[in-house]
Length: 266
Ligand code: DGL
Image (tube, rainbow, N blue to C red; front, side, top):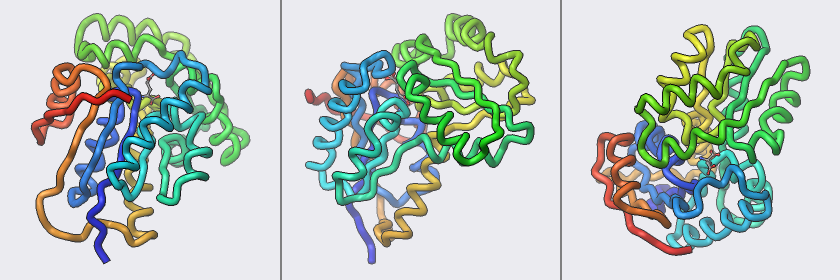
């Protein structure tokens, strides 16, 4: 059986594109629909109830587009809304926190794991709980990095300002003897070279979004809903903010395809 319905991806802005990039690489047959709620980004500092409400609005928009699977390509939304949305939809729903956790647990040798994410993700304690459930003796150090998302959303992620802010923000993690650091926000892979440089080569960075595509791939096979029809797959992008800003970042990040996003209001 082949299923040509699209896979839906949601994020508060452009961050989920780091997950889409990996989907295009690992699942080149699949049609993709992406929605970034750029107008209301960042979600990180918002109260949980608000993030849940916004995530439902994005979910309803994509359900109208007849998606076969939903990927919550945002850690902040995954932390507070995944369980509820998963319970209520009759299609598979995938979040980014557990795949990142699994990869970190597999990678670490000294069981000293760091997590960087938004204030909301860190406050939820979701990564910490997930890691401790698997490896109770692990030491977990979490750090909120509220300045990172605005740098990415304003397309300054390669600037000298970005380097300075990342270096200053990560100081508290430099002396924790980490061997593994989870990029617990889907915006952060765009800052990856700078983060790696600041933390040093001895620290392995885990891209939770990219790890998630392994799970998406597995679920497509498990539910027998992969698109096995040959042909050119489509990718549609929607943003609640500026299409010019969105397309600029998307083109630079995705490289392979031209992006012409459409503006919508939620
Ligand atoms: N990209 C999102 C995440 O993974 C959220 C960024 C934000 O809106 O604060 O958490």
